[in-house]
Amino acid sequence: MNDAMATSSNRGSQFLLAAIAVLVGALATQPALAQTNCASAVAGFRSILEQDIQMGRVDKSVYDKATAELGNADAACRAGRDAAAVEAVRATKRRYGYPQ
Image 1 (cartoon, rainbow, N blue to C red):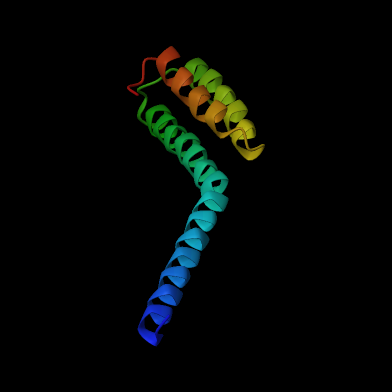
Image 2 (image 1 turned 135 degrees about the vertical axis):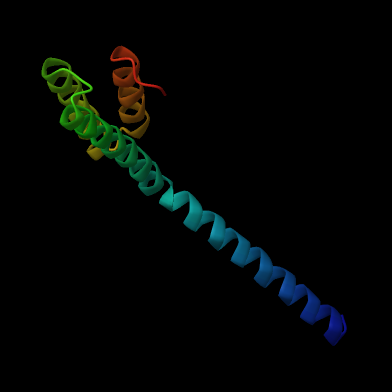
């Protein structure tokens, strides 16, 4: 094997190792990304509810029930049950007539 072929082979191996490292890193951050998504879903809907109660667009009893349900979604999110948390937020929105 000549020097040019050896250098090309080494570069290919280095590229492959770098690509694997990037892929492993991306997979390792998925739970954190998912938790960020569920945390954003909970916080976003909580913010909407708070605005609605302040503006008088929602009854206090509905606000209390919806925020209690969001507390359950938040707990699921913090426990790493991201899909369940996001689904709980969606279900709460549906139950109280909020758009998805």
